Image (cartoon, rainbow, N blue to C red; front, side, top):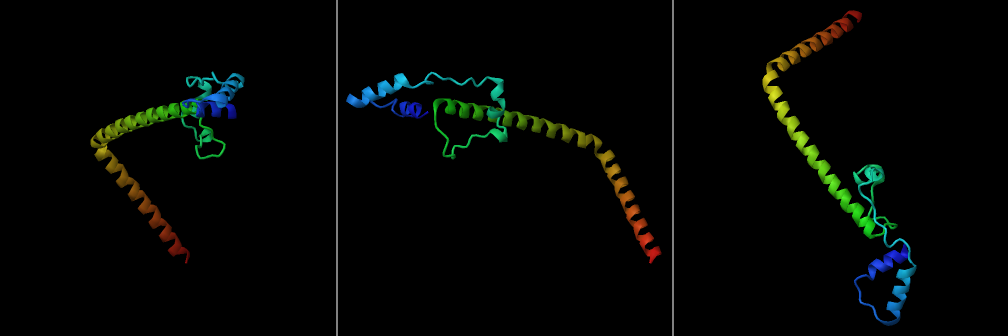
Length: 135
């Protein structure tokens, strides 16, 4: 891991002399340079779709900024924004349908609400009357 991080850090630098030879030797010996994460793999769905149990904490001391980690974070951002947009669109559709239902059923809803209140008041009065009789 240290070798990969060092290679990525020095990728844009122009090295000369002994330091350049040391870096080329390091590149030859470090494994995993050609690693590419497959973000379309379903096994990573919980990680990439934002499950709270598998969050990536950039503030953690063990976090390493690698190319694969950058890909994961970019894919997470993309999927979370798609999810938010879908929720927003479905929420707008629900609000629209709810508004149309309230206009149609306003009288029915109000009548049922009145009936519920009347029954509650009757129950409360019965309890009060029972308590007065027992005293």
